[in-house]
Length: 264
Image (cartoon, rainbow, N blue to C red; front, side, top):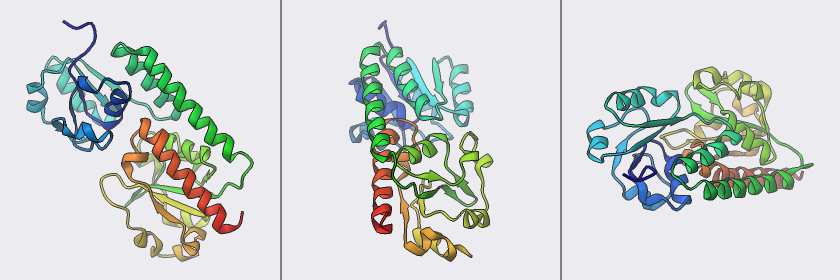
């Protein structure tokens, strides 16, 4: 038996991407159907969506470790435990917790030094963006995680908005772990008057024209100036390396464009 897990099934993308970045992609034997990064991981057998899994496919892969994420996969994890598989479920919700997940996962597979190097590099890149935006005007940002009902951004998203130089308009909701606890009303969005709207609807494309034509939203600064943007959910709603790199980069680019357009 190997000293560390060698046949790993990842039920969400962030652990898959982390393992590949650590040079351990060969250990991944099964992935989520939503896996985008890295592209080569999409060639691995797909064994799950986010809320359900094909247990027969997982069992056929003979995993010695299954990695999941959050309370939303608790039932999947419990069933796999009942079937005798070792399961680890991460629950990272902040930038700091994402970095911790990388370090912990590296230790689990025996490459703690590489995980520490990866997490430290990501920290330096994040700090560089934070420093570059310090002292600049901070546009008011509504991050729309879902459209019906309207759900505002989760902790790591709001943190990335701030790092990128924006000011989230619902900071009091950011620590609510469940989407239902971050539901906001269209009227309240209008009242808080965001200068930028960034939308990312998990599992479906954003329709910016639908956002712009909501009743009463013609009064919103972001709508009047045309500052409505989409960031694909794979880049911002996966609490892993993608959010800390590509997601942050896109947020930074959007806010820089807004400042230029507004003459700030």
